[in-house]
Image 1 (spheres, helix red, strand yellow):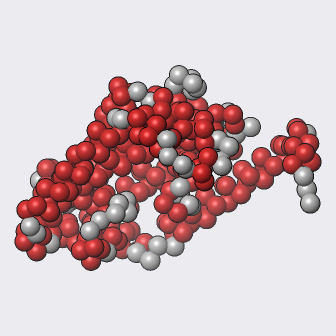
Image 2 (cartoon, one colour):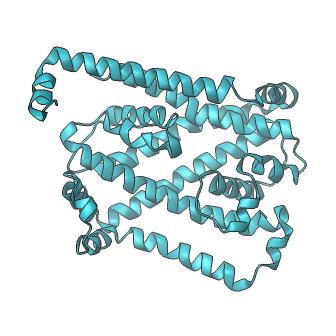
Image 3 (cartoon, one colour):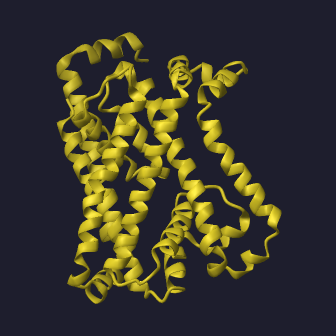
Length: 333
């Protein structure tokens, strides 16, 4: 049996470390290539998407497409700054290196369930002794984004849900009140993360405490002040507004005519369901993959235009950053 001492001795050799890092890079890049192949070239509806581009894109609508492209770096730039704020003051990370961490996280998340690889990908670009801090910052930032997504999704359901599913009008009034009441309290609880963590600390969380890094992670969560967490929620909202607008602009680019407010509400509902947020059982009746087509069809949009819009959003917001993340992985030392 190989002892920990032998493992440490093996890793202490610079040549051995370089070989291991090289193998890990290769494995990550192979998985990234496989994920891109599966999600782009192996799609069953790829021909429909190509036809959607050919039949619905008009050069007069190209400015909408360009605007969506311009917003992509702003979207991920805000996410980078959100992460940097949560890392400070324990770790001052230059913007360029933090951005590389964000892009690496996107790359790894592309081939992991529920994008869990985003955590590991980001940690590759920060010092090993600060991994607990990177984990705390990523977790805290993602919770903020989830809260905004949930609030936006409920607003979208209230705006366009009855048009998509008429029977929603028959839901009792108290049901909506309970939902909104529960969601409204989430930002308040979020800004009290330090107190909540202290409360958990007073409980007997044996399994968590067995993890050697847990005390440091716990301390990082306790250290987040209310003002910083409010700022993170504001940045999360700005990001949400940006990528919702990107989707709307792509719908316009492919000739889908929809009122801006109703369009954003429909997009909010789609994001809510596609992000696998726990929902009441009746919402499961709508298949996630068909929701966009079902929703925009009620506004007179054809299926091919909707497919082209949603696929373009994937290309711009995830595939291009993932490829840049792949380049960042290659440069990791």
